[in-house]
Image 1 (cartoon, rainbow, N blue to C red):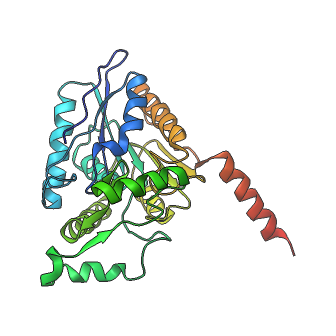
Image 2: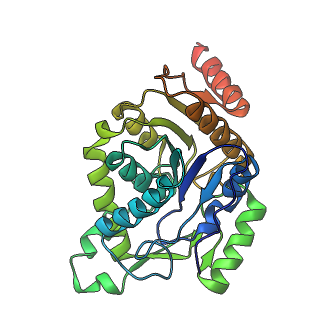
Image 3: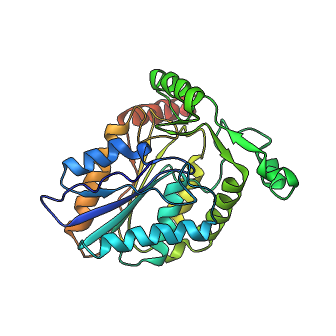
Length: 293
């Protein structure tokens, strides 16, 4: 398992560091990476020691250091460097932006501060308590349906992959207790310093995210100091939005935002939240029901 290749940059000098989810692989962001590369944006999806699947265990401080090293390597070669993350990778991307004021744009996909989505088990709070017992090296959280996917055909494919290899293109079959513990430490550290983020920021989140509720996205939007902030809500996806039904929307909006951010070094005004057409219809329906006597 290695890092994906760094694609050539034919049209501009903008690179993006893409960070996958906890204990997963660069395959999670393959579609987004390929789409950005086709638009002439250099993409780099590294494997981080102690964070990525199959690389052992490391502290969250080591995760941040590894991500910063990848960012610095890109910044030495490109005028603009942005950071994009998915799930816990989005939280890690935010940590990079807190320590590197030269981040051009920050793209947060399904950012996770709390595992508070509708599919999370009621006993999840016990996982953190178990870490401080002798069971911490034996216990692990096993992923289950819907695997972050609203697309049923893809969900079945992922279920088969996890049964066969304990890993899939949207993440691992299980996450160890030490990894979950370090992820919790990371989220707490990032939340305490949200005001340090001053990069242009794009937030994309599904309103039906079964892993991390929309509250996670709202926390970021309310706490950061981005000169240009755009929030997009999706209605036909679950947590793994870079692979699910609206992956084309995610890739298109990321590309557009990166272009807009790189094109202007002046401060921009924040835009109102953007919703998909399906979500707009749903909101109108809910509003109509609420108005009925």
